[in-house]
Length: 69
Image 1 (cartoon, rainbow, N blue to C red):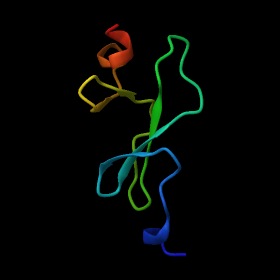
Image 2 (cartoon, rainbow, N blue to C red; image 1 turned 90 degrees about the horizontal axis):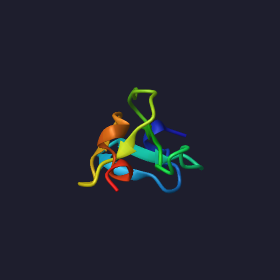
Image 3 (cartoon, rainbow, N blue to C red; image 1 turned 180 degrees about the horizontal axis):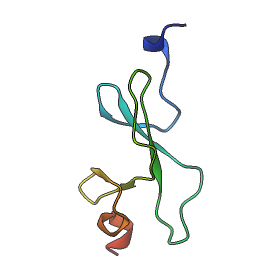
């Protein structure tokens, strides 16, 4: 199977043409949904990401929508 035939994981949020944010199964201790980046063809940062109120993603939990409540 060619890499271009590989599908992103279920629930993945498309960020760009070959970059997705995949939600982790459980929220963190503060109830914030966590994501990891995924790409079929490119290297990605191996760090936890959070979703901002505007829909963008950040590695800074303090910028996450869940921390703004």
